[in-house]
Image (cartoon, rainbow, N blue to C red; front, side):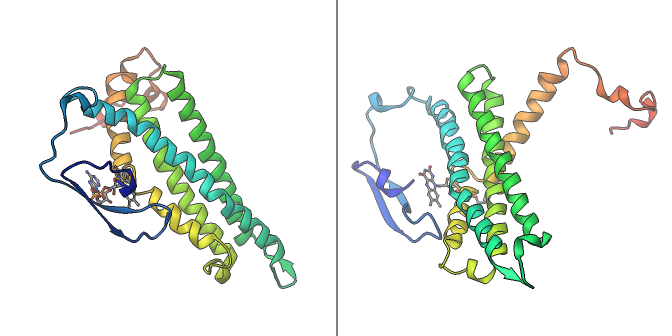
Amino acid sequence: MTAFMVPRTEGVETKYIYGLMGVRGGGAGRLVLKDVRVPERYALNGINGGFDVFVRMMIPERLGTAAMTLGSVRPAIEIATRYTSRRKAFGLPIQSFQAVGFKVADSVMLLDAARSMVYSTCLAVDSRRAHPNRVRRLVSETKKFVTEAAWTIANNCMQVVGGIGYTNVYPLERIVRDIRLSMIWVGTNEIMQLIVQNEWYKEYLKVISKEDVRDVEADAPSADAEEEKVYE
Ligand SMILES: Cc1cc2nc3c(=O)[nH]c(=O)nc-3n(C[C@H](O)[C@H](O)[C@H](O)COP(=O)(O)OP(=O)(O)OC[C@H]3O[C@@H](n4cnc5c(N)ncnc54)[C@H](O)[C@@H]3O)c2cc1C
């Protein structure tokens, strides 16, 4: 929990001491709870109902992280595009070398894909028609995909700007440092993967596979070779 968010409460001690690699407008510290008594009327969602509040809160936390990461990384593409169209080697702007231009192209593609994913997941959440478990999967997928795409983009952009990209002459080094946090906080990307795995298997095996849909396994020419389908 960031230290400035901690309310003044008896028994709650914060030690605001840690330097951060990036996102230096924020901070992180250790929060110590010792003999803290909270009146029952302040319990969110009643006693033992906190988990539901947590699950609901993780939607804006994780989707918000995905959305803000798009904005954090977009300037890296602009810087890389400008630099590679001006910087010359062998008399040509380096954008004309495919090893360079392709990295920028891939970055633009990833940003567009990531942006689309954020929008479509936001639509699913806002519609209130998607099942909460599916929302949980979509939000987790989006947080993981977008933050990892942003990390690839930030590194691609630094790479094509070369040595000067690693200095503070351009803000690329700050963007790389800032983006790194997005794969860790509000639940690490490994935890996002765990949620996606759990929710997908549950949804497929308990819901989708029970629906009256075409059996896609039957598309194979030897689909009737049942003796070859060995599962144990
Ligand atoms: C700058 C900053 C600001 C933060 N702000 C907030 C905030 O405002 N509010 C808040 O609540 N938290 C905040 N956090 C905390 C952040 O959300 C956690 O650090 C993060 O969720 C990871 O938890 P952890 O540090 O306990 O890692 P650990 O749980 O110690 O995990 C260590 C590693 O093990 C992996 N791991 C752990 N369990 C599993 C598992 N079951 N399967 C697979 N892999 C696993 C993790 O993915 C990770 O790679 C902040 C952290 C930072 C650095």
